[in-house]
Amino acid sequence: MTEWDRAAQAWIEAQGTQGDFSRRRVLDPPMLARVYGFAPAHLLDLGCGEGRFCRLLAGKVGTLVGLDPSAALLTRASELGGARFVQGRAEALPFADGSFDMVVAYLSLLDIEGIEAALDEVVRVLRPGGRFLIANLTGFATASDIKSGGWRMLPDGGREIVVRRYLEPHPVPAEWRGIAVTNWHRPLSFYMRQLLQRGMVLTHFDEPAVPDPQDLKEEAYNNAPYQVMMEWQAAG
Ligand SMILES: C[S@@+](CC[C@H](N)C(=O)[O-])C[C@H]1O[C@@H](n2cnc3c(N)ncnc32)[C@H](O)[C@@H]1O
Image (cartoon, rainbow, N blue to C red; front, side, top):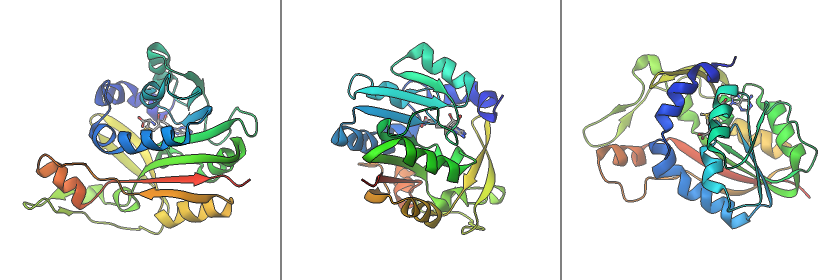
């Protein structure tokens, strides 16, 4: 049983049907736009969780496969449908070389322990010229010191955090809304170097904002964005 199996019920409740704030308001529109812009025939959602992003894509791209190690999350994903769901780990993908036009890692790279093996596997299962679309937490978010109170909002919507050991990859215990899992902090330079070393070419980069912020919480998000998006093209 994985940490994510133990957290599954709380995670499913936190996501609801529409996804949490970061997904619904910040990441879904630009992530969907990148997928539709590339129009993949075969897409893998790596670390698909309870399958929400696959359900958003269902019927709009060719074949969809969601992969996750958590049996509990995959049970929920299969109940709701929308894709073929496969149990497995990113570090050893049960797919042939060149099987996918696009691999999506939607807020899952920070949960994958064996990141270097996982990136080797992503490159292996992508066809030449295929795309790797990533949404991840920023390095300053994963390196922020939760013990010092996490992110504090200031009266003008600015935010204060304490960042430690930014340049050093390390595990971080993360706990919110009854979910307790290990995140893996890695600086942005780590991901950039690892993907460049594998011959990948950056085709898109963004730190997406909340469009048209409605309140101080949304303004605070835009003062210190929490997520980064990248799309990389496989050689060939
Ligand atoms: C934060 S959740 C994101 C789920 C989904 N992509 C979403 O955005 O809602 C991270 C997911 O990564 C999965 N995960 C953890 N370790 C993994 C691994 N080694 N390989 C693939 N997925 C993994 C977890 O089981 C969990 O479902």
